Image (cartoon, rainbow, N blue to C red):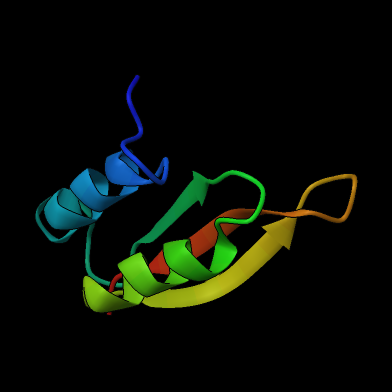
Length: 70
């Protein structure tokens, strides 16, 4: 798996297809790496989706983004 220069190319690809595969008001969760929180949020919001939450891991590091299709 090649994440590209910032590690988030797979998220970009998923967001491009998410409108087609996720039901209206459906929820999608995606894990991201340390320090990628703000960029992950930006990718999701630019794609036209809502960020419902960012969930930390057991070490209190932001790790999972919760996305909803409007």
